[in-house]
Image (tube, rainbow, N blue to C red; front, side):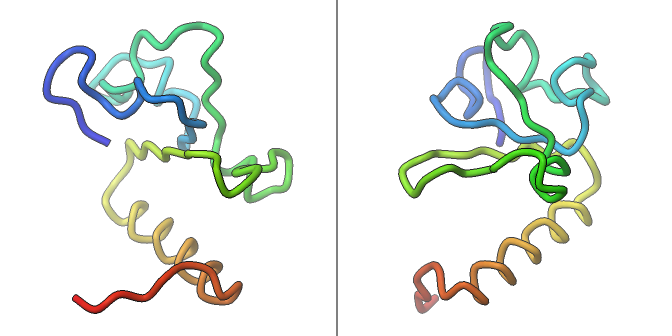
Length: 99
């Protein structure tokens, strides 16, 4: 996710939002995420840990758009990508493309 000016960010699209900690949306930057500030009260932000723990279903169907906003270190992004890739590969999901 990124933002270049007010109203120009991925959080404004109709997607299920996930973060790694509640403060990403409720704490002002620099610790909170710029992109998640001033979200409408009815716009839920789900903790990715609650999905991993089985308390939230995560993506409900193949048409659902999801966004994960990390406010941590890049190592957390790499770890999350590794988990997503491992699960997708084990499930035979995705499309391999040449680069």
